[in-house]
Image 1 (spheres, chains in turn red, orange):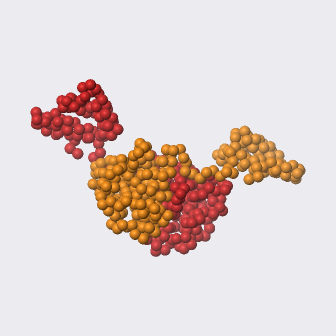
Image 2: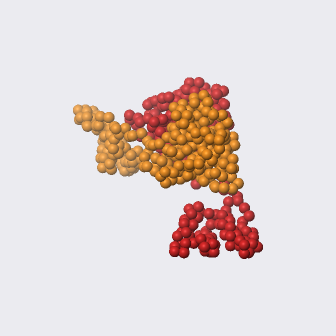
Image 3: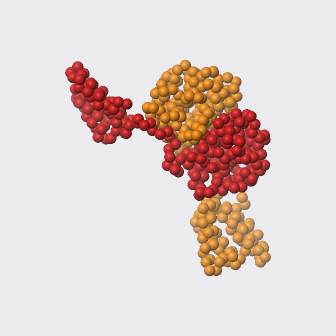
Length: 258
Length: 258
């Protein structure tokens, strides 16, 4: 999944931060980086910090003014750490990401991140259709440029995955088992109950109480079929103990050999 | 909002990354950092990178083994970049964060992040009740330790804010205006229509068409009362033009002077 949202870094002071931002972008599938009058162009430090995202850094467009960097964009979102005197109220990152993902095909969004210390100017914020605010700790809201880029790129990816119904999670391992059905669990509980009876472990004054606790534990854990079979095997082994070891061994043989 | 989830960095190679992780934590309101056999203890580089989160770094507990670091925790979540052969299937960060926030009072969660290159060992992952996976770009999933800590801490904060019904967004500015009511908008549209009639701008064969477009634009923008008043003032100024300049000036006086 390749995300076409442009990240626009405005007036960045330290080139190293540009490299870190490029890396943060690429980890989330973004590749379109624009720089507006950085104090220094990307240097060795920027390239080192970009690491495997050197392509993003080297393809970055450098512009002298913001208008050129966003001229072909349809939705411009500014990252804002403060309350503004006037203008749009900022939204949370998932809301901003959703509005990017819901754009019609063929349109492009830009997310603007300002200077390390002072952010975006009011004139730059006036260029934005929307503001996004990362709800940081009010006592220490100092996300650096790469950290803010990471969080916003992550939310763009999460929104894009949600829109396509993907999870982005690794494929379940091939050996994973189907979740046990209610019937399989009932058989397990019956098996449990007869073993506990044989052991004299059930409270005769309230025999359901213990079974209820066992049901609750297994119910919460949503066991898979193999886990149920393992417990059935253990219960059979207990039943077979001292009386019919061969039967217990046969039952163990019925387990899924995972 | 102070979040008590413990971040456990296991076998960290570079002390600088410990400092960056401490900073990432504090920006999201986390403060409980534990280090399990870091290759080197936090040093000057770590302190420089912790920046304003020096308190988090200096209060970090250092343990020789993982069990000591999580002994008093009730839910242990491991960050995992890979599919495991066996064991829990990982969940996405918002899901893991929700399970932390939904813990009963008095319980504590730990999130484990492994070594820079190799992550957590299978033995360490076996200690985890749950695995969390940041759904990164499969072609370049190289989030550094601070970036992964930032994303997971951010999701913990977002889940905690959601659970308490807070937005974490800056207070709306005191001068923000109430959204215009349907009635206020109808008056605006009537005013618009009479001005467009006076200007001869309405298409006589289909006079509703233009008004419908104007309604759609304003409807999408959900204007506030002051914005409606500004447009009413402009329309009055157009009506007054050349004929009754004093009346237009009076109408302008009715606007909210924001």
